[in-house]
Image (cartoon, rainbow, N blue to C red; front, side, top):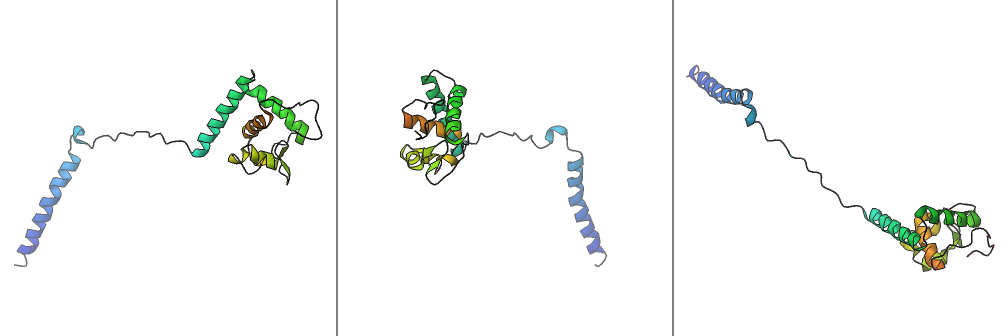
Length: 149
């Protein structure tokens, strides 16, 4: 009995292992696992990206209304920034921020949708709010007015 039990066990183990070995090593190529199809799923843009794109479209539209390019409009507002705050768009102060916005004016004209104060917002956001404040015109950049705008 002691000799037959190991012999039976050995034949069962061998019988189970051999087909697995044969099927794994002698499988035809067409029987291989199907190729995985990789699909690139377009992730929706983040809310910040959506807001930035909308802001850019709006400022481009404002530039078109003024019959200038976006670059031309930004150049004009750059001169305002130089006049008002020596070109420092990111100036933050207790009363004035950005390119010379009163913090209360920034909030009143919807600037807080971009940042708490103008100095924390980007140039396009400041241009958009500036265009709201001025009714679509760019303040005189050559006759810097000490009282601000």
